[in-house]
Length: 492
Image (tube, rainbow, N blue to C red; front, side, top):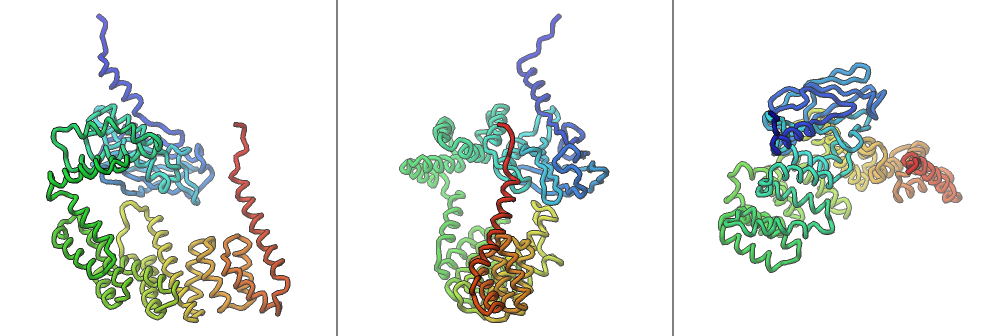
């Protein structure tokens, strides 16, 4: 007797076969990892762009419905083969591997090393598709050096819809689908979603999220009357809905007058401040309120409100205010006080951090972020010290800021050059600035400083234009060589 496989049964078999992923350089077991289990992985760099690289760094990103977190498993590296063990948690829906050596990233030729988490029936868990879509369309460029690919992300969501059509009834999924669709089908995506809009409108009972999506889409279609009608209906159906908090947030963000902003802030805190999920938003509003008083030049109130903020927020605000003052050349003593406090705090954070590392950052990225923040704040402080004529104090700070940026940022180099011109011997500062010009990372003010040094050394500016042109020619030659390395010379 012949056995007949049902259509659904055949589909399940096909899904099990196609759901498995495999890579040339990366092997892992089990082949279909499940939540709460361990995964053994082996990366063979001999089959990757990182061949012959010794110090290969491994960061694994565990994606879930709530976002993602970075984990750095202990690994063994022998003859270019990196082995490690990964512990999954109950929320993981997808795994994404990052392999880096000396800033070079292996992202599997732009496809990434993305591994689904599986159900017991050997099908990918529902959240895998949205997680993988986010990697291709949002996070992949920053985390793995992958070019954004909305079409690939859309294909994953459409595969998820085929497996489970009810996905589209979930507001969060539908919002991601519409966002990705608009990126992948820029010209005609609004026409494509008309059936989805009708399906939502024809529901017997609409949720507030349903209304929000429809309002957004009708606004995008420039049908403002329809959007306004739906807005009125939503507010009538949900008089205490989330729209009230959104409106209160928008009103607070738009208000510039600090006294009026304070009234809005107090009202928001009284109504929403005791909810755990709003703590971050309230803290953000406190920082904005403090800045509003600073912008109104009420610095005493600003300082009082700043005491209620985290040290990191205080430093960010101080730097913002100090930089604005420095650009205008006003209140330089107060600017110095604010910038100094911000700079000293961020420098201490590099060696003895008090701020908690975000889950989404690897240790290396967090450390580099701390250095970059210090460089930015130190650059502000150095600029103010330059304006105040305290060149010797400003020089080492400007040097650190520029060095953290590998002496490749013209703005940071400018502050370093201006202070070097004033505080270093002529020959030394001239050689330093010549290097900036040759490397093509010198601003007009940096070149002006070089001209001043040239005049001191030569007792005249005669011949400076020719001298500068020769240095700039070197910069152009270096740039051409860099571009030549990126040109593809292969048969099409």
